[in-house]
Image (tube, rainbow, N blue to C red; front, top):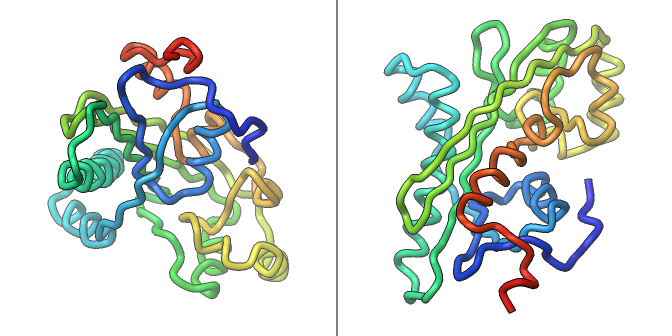
Length: 222
């Protein structure tokens, strides 16, 4: 997925939109939509947060929202520690969780783990929970959770090996070891869900809330 236009089309007057994510997929979604935004990647201990949330019997959808919020909060705290600016900051945090057979599947740590995930998911339906949280000047003003249903076709270990060899380290970027925007589509027999949500950023709901806060063509700000 590429951004066809380098010049931003939409922005917020007197405010900066910030994406608290290093995800190229999420960045490209916003660029392709023409959003004027900045990137502020943050690191949180996702494994520890998930483990603590599961120990407290938190549901997977709530965990996804929590992780998205913590990422946005971490970015907002970094901004608060920087020299003050005259513009407001709208910080976007996002997270995605894969759930299959009642289990949360994390990003594979190794190529071998990626293959194991693929073979375990083969022939099964699973869900992707895509959460997004919006903070304005450090205050949470909105969140959204999207649920997509996907079913992998049945394939053998040889196909999994060929797929992983083809995409290389990209197999480690997402839970389930796939990206449907590329050759990962060959793994599936059925996909139900919004394309952007499956890629990890519910774009249309985000555009809706940003319009409520003044999102409009940047040429009007001149």
